Length: 322
Ligand code: G3H
Ligand code: 13P
Ligand code: ZN
Image 1 (cartoon, rainbow, N blue to C red):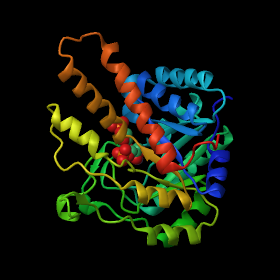
Image 2: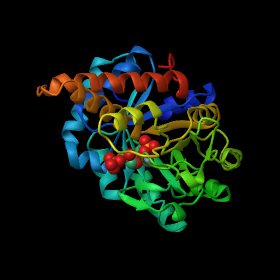
Image 3: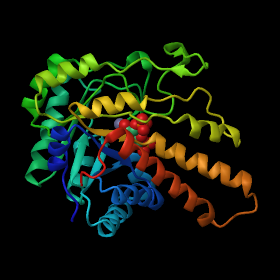
């Protein structure tokens, strides 16, 4: 199977009550860990590349690594997606350069400007057989390399979504219902504590999601900022010399609920970073003499694979849906 767009994937996910995982890729081990898990579990998957990833690893290397993963995993649909495309030029460069899907993120712009930029990308993308994700609302955290303060974040306004989709012709829409980027999604003050003293974050705004679904029946919704920040990774990082106090993410059960509704794509990056960092910190603490990168990158890749497999089965519900 060649690289695919997300059109079929999302249609099946919408009707099947599950979501496709969109995992950020920055190097070979990440591409391999994700696609080995998806391949073994017969799951569709989106591999997404941010502007930062292109700056770090280079567009050509990323595309060729993803193409290699397609060859190695011929039985599953894989889409190559630009994450948080900041402008038309970046989107065009990815459309021309082998991507099957792009996100134009003009969510920080006023509504009409967001419509205008998104439509320009949609027109170009559709003429080249590529699909487009757009965004309404502003997530807290680092978005498009711009840090959005918690107080400046805003939920998507359901009354805007229908007009936005009609005017732009976008293929999927990222909305803000309380997720955010990074490993610190909530301050301790925003949380309560359970009987064991563990932080419990405020619930996602399912009311906003349901209002959006009502206005866009059948239309695929995307959730960014959907890492769960597994506490065993955080504990390992902190045990072996790291310093990530109060790192906290989105509870997996809530993402599973969203995946049963119109949410067809769930974005995960921070959990990959945590899996790798926890694995490498532990490895160096236990094997201080190792200096062959393969000795610590191999278990790190395995940690990514196991984390992604867990998401596919327990959060996304996309296993066996290839
Ligand atoms: O949405 C942000 C993603 O986690 C990508 O992050 O721009 O540091 O690659 P990045
Ligand atoms: P996380 O930081 O929660 O992994 O979100 C990733 C993301 O939304 C990429 O676009
Ligand atoms: Zn994002």
